[in-house]
Length: 340
Ligand code: FAD
Ligand code: EPU
Image (tube, rainbow, N blue to C red):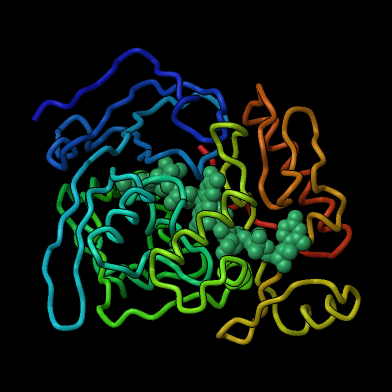
């Protein structure tokens, strides 16, 4: 099938939530899986784009940008234990989550209001408020450009970790080797409220909800997120700009002794996750900017474009924040978004 394509350079600013400028030499909107099999795409230098909400555009891109806009969502099957729901990679993540709740298939409510598409969710294993997509993902269906073949990856095969997956470990998220076309989620019928995260527990307490249902949790998550995180339409951003660093116990103990206020989270493997937002705030960067790019005044982990920034401006502020945290705490911050 012929693909809809534009041969003139296309401005990508509307396609990334940091609102950074840069053109793509070639831009294709992919609305059906079959479009991906077109002969001319197999050898092309490619970048697979979803909603651009985890992206830093560093300049013009000489290759082909394939924007995945494949729609569709349906109940694939149901057994005694679970519903299996499949969604096209181009579906808006938040809308999909709200739709599952409306159908009476809970389980994704903690991940409400995360921007972007269904197809990007497995790439960094999106997570929030005590849940990761890895906890509910069943299979990923993708087109493998290198083998010119369809590929199915199950949950084990995705090798999920904190903001990590096979797709990142292999570098395929940068090389454009795979385009995810749909994702199947397994939503267990035995539902349990997951509201231990302090922000959510407090929000439910404020609302005097003692036995929350899935919709209550989604509403609490949405309210907390609206309070803490800037809306990219109003203040361009890409969510958390750095990972929360995970360090060994010895380093965590030394940091805790020197800085008793530091929030830390024990990990299953014995290591300790540190709150990057706290480190950045203590290093003096909360609400501070260098040129048009700064760290958000209400959440220091979120880098924001105050207007007219380029990728180079983002990289300057990023380097300054990393240097400040390294100098104060001897901790290295790794950026979360993908750089193109
Ligand atoms: P893009 O930014 O377009 O792409 C991201 C990566 O995925 C790229 O490498 C791209 O090549 C690849 N990719 C995208 N689609 C496909 C596909 N179909 N096939 C193969 N590769 C693909 N993230 C969290 O984990 N938790 C949060 O709480 C959270 N909060 C956020 C809040 C805000 C305000 C913002 C702006 C972002 C937040 N994020 C969060 C980050 C972002 O929402 C997620 O990373 C999201 O999954 C990105 O989706 P996207 O479609 O915009 O991906
Ligand atoms: N904190 C500060 N100052 C700040 C920001 C945070 O002291 O300016 C402290 C908070 O008080 C809290 C701790 O740091 O004690 C953690 O803050 P918060 O609960 O806001 O979460 P986070 O660690 O900053 C992570 C994810 C978010 C996710 C939330 C909720 C990462 C990199 N970020 O943020 O994901 O929504 O938890 O689960 O893991 C994203 O990945 O883009 C993202 C937004």
